[in-house]
Image 1 (cartoon, rainbow, N blue to C red):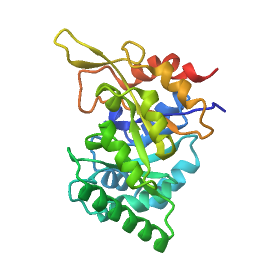
Image 2: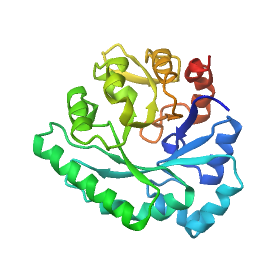
Image 3: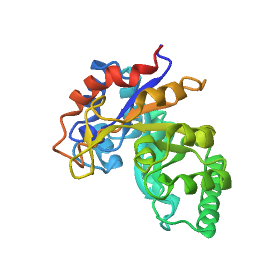
Length: 265
């Protein structure tokens, strides 16, 4: 068993069904997948219902395959007045899949103290729902908007220490925060990671490139993670759904083999 759990997001292959996604993962020896899109849609509950009928059909399918579902990704935004009841359509599918998490976005821009209090209250209410219903799935918040800012992310995890964080390592790094500095402050809250690579073009803009062809400090990240006893999923978020000019996910997974396994020493 690898010391790390390698994963990929279906954002990179949004045209595929889950049957095809599982085939892709098994061809590349990937243990887990993170569902963001399936069969051409971001509406995961609808796509899963069309493919499997009921959550029990999904559970039966996964029992025959080697891949596990690490998370189902929603579009709910924590800091934009969202009600976490919006994750309800995903819950039965996540429970049937044995997924640990439902991804929600942070959203927002500049956060006030009141924003942090409201978010903490919403997450407390969610935990009460989980306990009352005996749910295993939890929510994790991606560092995508407001929480890609170092100071705001640190303030959030200090204010809401029970919050589970999906650390998009590239987002925070691209904003100028060193990965080691941030890891020291949020490690205990991180339950999932997104990784991708990029380089600066002639206009000074960051452009996504195949893993290992850019300047994202993957070796440094893997060295940090190697000191953690948990097997936190390291998920390649190949954003081909939003950037169709990128090469196919198959190519990115092939390129990633030597890149993200720099930690297997």
